[in-house]
Length: 350
Image 1 (cartoon, rainbow, N blue to C red):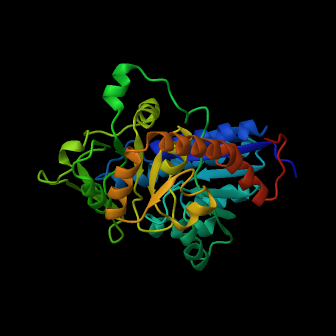
Image 2 (image 1 turned 90 degrees about the horizontal axis):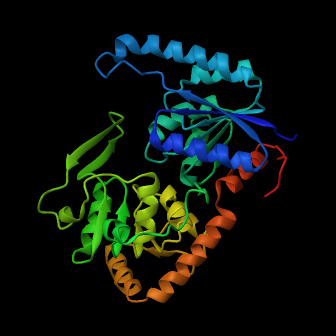
């Protein structure tokens, strides 16, 4: 069956909203029309009033969703993460739309305690982490597939920078992302390097017991405290950072097998990527010639020092990584792969 139209449901989350937009653009390049449905049930109730007002707000948002999505006449409903979308609502969507309702979850294994409760509601559940597939299957999910992240060449590209841009955004080494205890431990091994860390000065730890993210300040005596910029970076500013830095560092939040978004986005920006080794990376890039991996703090420090001294080789690897990202890891490629696995044909080939 050739697919013509997709309904995309996404929650209130900066990352999920961005990914939903990238998916829509990817589908568009395949000749598939998409309609977007923003689902934010808890607009007004805060944490204190959530128990009282939350159910009312949810029912209002649910009714709007159940009225709007079926009217889109989509051949497929794609939920991007959708952590606030209850299984009962997914069941109603499946009944009302009478087409497959699938999820692309972005936060395994960190939020596996949440996602494994949601996945059985979907016809197919795509997870970003290969090691989480078996967990979802044990939870009763009908069908679980591993689908990793991607890049959008219209967004993730090498920028021409001004002199001020290079001063403001450039450094020998850069890390962009939330700080976790394991990330801080690895970054502290880089004492003495020209390092910038685009993040807030707090540790973030997910508590499986409470389901909440706990934060605490990075100690003032930490060797990386002075490297922390004090804010996060998004959109065009993020692209400038990748374009201005000699080496982009990627440290995964979890000691698991999932490659994160930074792998594909940094490579697509033509950055030299020094990333923590993950089992599946060898299937996605040519290690050593398109991206470079490290294993632990000592290896990270040694490779950072070595590649800072080899500018021409860095540029060659960065160019090869960008070419590979544009060839095999765009959102158009990823959405075509998703549709193929679901048994759909696309109107337009890449």
